[in-house]
Every structure is written in structure tokens, then in C-alpha cells.
Image (tube, rainbow, N blue to C red; front, side, top):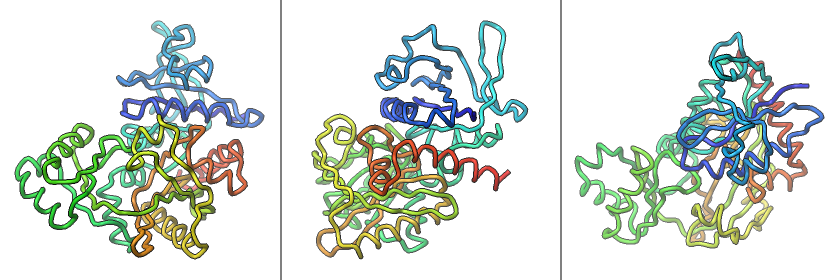
Length: 358
């Protein structure tokens, strides 16, 4: 039986979301095929092998189970091809066959840990280092979309250094190109963390300051009056995007509270849109997925602009949420792929990708 290591938590603003996603993943990986091991990363970056109950991960109390915790690392030494447990001055190597990183946001979705898996010579679920990094950085993903002709809202970006040199200039550029209202976002963050809808120039500076708390680069985007569509993409070289879903947020926009706390946003799977419009969305999702070099899985988000029906790329998530209310598994379930079958497919795809890149 193959051993799959699920890694959860992370030194990220999305730590709590990761715990909830990991709980679902751990409970649904087919146990007749895989032996599941779990390793958690705390908010302050400690790595701990965890042999306790999965519900304690989802509930956030796993760190209180001290008897089930052991310091551990993913060894970059290729002779190990797994994790090293550190027990009171001694160590033990545990070989694993694949890693399933359920790590949202920085240090988990941005290519950093994917590089470690490559060094360690271990197959892993999801996108590789470069594609993860490009998708995580909204400014880079926007540039790629522009280059390959995937339509999107107007946008600008600035690093913290650039903005500090000429804040009024950047504000003026944004006002002239994007108009108000607009959205200010950290370039590298997920789950709508640090995003502000800016209705006038008076609140622009505060929104920039808040975004810079989460990243050293900020993206400003025009506000689009549109429906929020999401598309689940699955596969490596021959990826497919079978279903388009729609989110009707309970808040003004689909922010962190609407996604994970309120639990009142409406979900429509499939989205109530004409077949030709659904095909346009899936075609664009596959186009940007391929252009960014994605593999395994991603969720691609779009706006359907109300004024003219234009489909506009919003962002791509290489480690989408896997909680009980998350859109990615729900969309594939609607296409006939159960949650356990999806997880099995993702693990198989990791082996397939690994065999072609070693």
C-alpha cells in the first residue's frame, strides 16, 4: 500500500482554512489504496508529525495532542525520499510515495514547498514550482493572461518600494485607468485576504497600507459589475474542465468572511448560463491553465460582466479550498467524480507527472 503524506497548516494567513481543508482530505483519501500520514506546520513555522485524530486538525486543537506530536522534516536528501522524525536526540526516516500539500497561500501555494519536494525526489499533488509561483502572483498571472489573449479587467501593480517613492502618482494612474470603485489586493495572498474595495480617493491610501501588510507587491483592478463564475480544471497534459459554477456572495464581494465564516453565500453548480457561454469559460480556463504551466488541478475564477456578457479572467488558485463547502470538489462531484475518487485521481496524476519529469 502506498504511503501518502498530507501536509497541512503553514506559516500563512490561511492557516485555519488549511486545517479545515486537510480534515476533509484526510478523511476521504481511499484507505484501501493509501496509508495516510499527516504532518502539520504551525503558524510560526514549526514542522510536526501528527498521529492523532483528523477532527482535531479541522477543529484547530491538534497542537494540544502532545502525545501524538513529533518534530519532523521533509528531508531534501534523495536517499530518504520521505520525512525524518526527530525524537529526543535520535532520528527515524519514513519513506513516502507521494505528498498531498493542503497548504493555502504563502509558503504552500507559491512554489516554495514544491521546490523542496523536487529536491527530495518525491511525487506531489498539484502544480510545480514555476507554475505555482506565477499563479500565486496576481501581477504575473495578469501579465501572462494579457500575453496569451485571455481577457481580464484593467489593472495596475506596484511594489512597496515603487509606491513609497511616488504614492500620489500611482494613485492618479489608478484613478485615470481604473476609475472608482476599484479593488486593491496583495499580489501574493489568497482567500481574499487583504483585499479592499476602494470607492473614492479618500480611502485609497488606507487600502494600500492594508494590502502591503500581506505582501510587498500590490495589484489594483477595476471593479467589474458581474457574476462570479468558477471553473474546476483537472489533469496534466490532457486537462479538462467539465463544469462551471457560480458564487452569489452574501457580502458585497466574495471576501474571507463570505467564503469561510458566514456560510450564507449561494452556490449554483452548474452555473445558470447558456451552453455557449459555459464553453467560453471552460475554453479560457484551459487556455490560462496551459499558459501558466499548471498540472494536477487548479480552480480558475472569472467574472461574467453584466453590461455586455464579456467573460473576464479574475484569478487562478493552484491549491483551491477542499472544505465541505468548497467549490472545487463540488464542481467535480457534479461532473460525476466523487470526493474520494477525485483525491485518488489527484494522487495518480502526481505519479504520472513525476514519471515524466525525473
